[in-house]
Image (cartoon, rainbow, N blue to C red; front, side, top):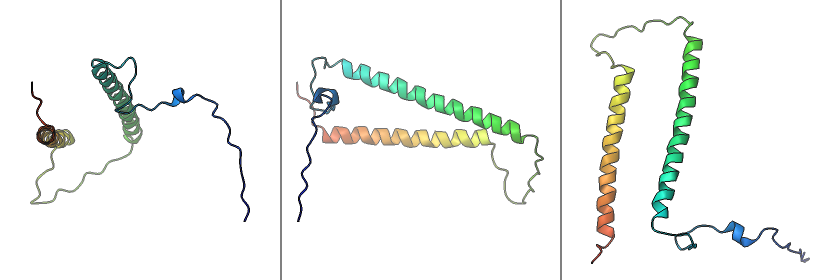
Length: 123
């Protein structure tokens, strides 16, 4: 059996450059007020990125609608006994109302679970 030994190169970058932040990582600039500011900045950047993506989707949808609007559209037959479907805007609003209700219920559950698992602070 042959063993191959390879020389390891020394890392070209110092380890300080690759420090990973963990809950236990402490830096000189850690303060109680920086976390909320950092979280707020992340939130703003996340929402901004999502809104940019949404705007791109709206622009693409409008371009697509404009391109296919010249094509003929057939009317769908009416089926007796089946009520008319609500408009797309009404269906979308209803769907988001249901999602908001579910998210609120999930938030309340998470807060109750947190209160049950985290011991109350004594003064």
